[in-house]
Image 1 (tube, helix red, strand yellow):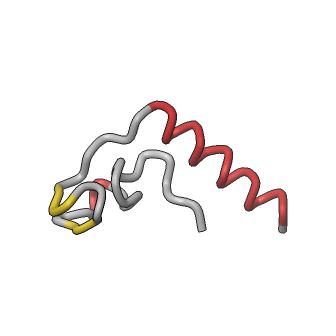
Image 2 (cartoon, helix red, strand yellow):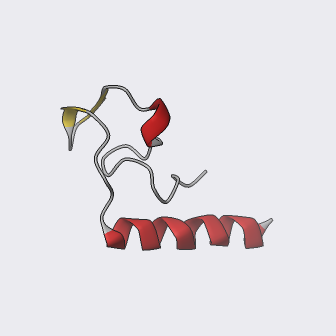
Length: 53
């Protein structure tokens, strides 16, 4: 399943349920706003998943 378009830049988890998370790229981090490119890519990925079903 694709990450939410507005999920964290590093892990894709929504802001309201994020807390602190660990990723190799972001280390220990709080929610970080995704880039415009990430938002667009995530939206296309979610659309592709829906149309593939």
